[in-house]
Every structure is written in structure tokens, then in C-alpha cells.
Length: 227
View 1 (cartoon, helix red, strand yellow):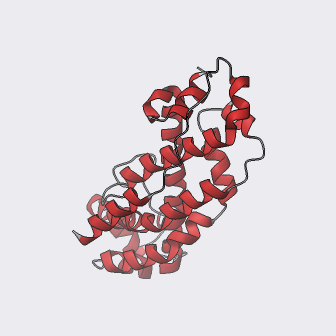
View 2 (view 1 turned 60 degrees about the vertical axis):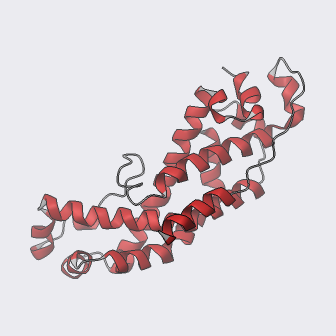
């Protein structure tokens, strides 16, 4: 219960960018002076809020085909005990469940880093991003953030893997070659970061396709003119 309350408070505490009244504009050029950067930040904020609302649940990553953390490639060629374990669907699902639950736990640390990056990043060519493809803004955000999400999640992924482990993680790590606990921790962190960007991109594409769905007058006006 405390964990759920923490997540809810975090989501409610996210500072949405202030709404503003738009002038009467009929073309995208008319709106350019009003602030393409502002529209992009709002688009990324709403997209991120929606993505994290889904991912910050116990099964958020596992139940999302785009965000799900897969088994690391190193385990595919493992021999001996690890190979026998991983051939069992029940064990595969158990390990996948632990990894994806760890990703959900660690995503709490990623969310504020994403919002801070959106607020503070420099957008050099906002016009191109506004006019860009379905995930143009998310792709820019990913490039701008570099390894920030991975770095934010890495410690919490390790803690979660240890807390959630019922023995299977340590057994596989001990038996497999080419992967350590730290390697598994890194894999989950990097795969989860990629999943977060894919989830944000999906929301961005959905909003671009239906700007009114964002419930934001700036987004609706700016991106509505592009349709």
C-alpha cells in the first residue's frame, strides 16, 4: 500500500507545463512565434505521463509488448544447468517476471529524470520536430538524454532483483557463462530504458494522430494544423 501511495503521489506531483491561451491562428506559420518548443515540451510531458502511468505498475513492463524486458542473449547459449532451466517455459516466465518487475520498480527513479530533461533540454530545431514523424520528439529526447535513464535505474534494478529473487536469478547467473549479476542488472536497466522510450513514442504517435486527445489547447492547436 505504501508503495502504491508513493507512486500515486509521484504522478500527481509531476509539474505539468502551464496552460496558455492561444491567439486565433489559421496556419502553422502563425503559431511558430507562439512557441514550437513549448508545444514539444507539452507533447513530451503528456506522452511521458501516459507511458509511466502504465509502466509504474507491478506488471507494467511484462504486460506491454513494446516495453517488455527480454531474456539476455548470453543465456540463450548457456550450457549445463542453465540451459536445462531455461528450456522450461515455467522457469523462463518466472525469470522474465522477476526482470520486468524489477524494471517497474526502478522506473520510479527514471520518471523524474525524464521530466527534468524535458523541462531543461535545448531544442535546436523545434520546427523540424513539430513537423517530424510520429515519434520525432521522443527520438530527439532519447538522443538528448543519452544514458541518463539507464544510470538512474541501475541501482534500483539491482536492489529489486535481489529482493524479488526466489533463487532462480542466482542459479542462472552461477550456471551461465558470459553473464554476471551485474551484467543482468545492466541488461535489465538498458532494456527497460529502451522500453520507456518506445512507450513514450507510442503515446506521442497517438497524440499526433489525435491532438485533441491530449486535453491541452497548445497541443491541439499546434498539431491539429498538421493533420
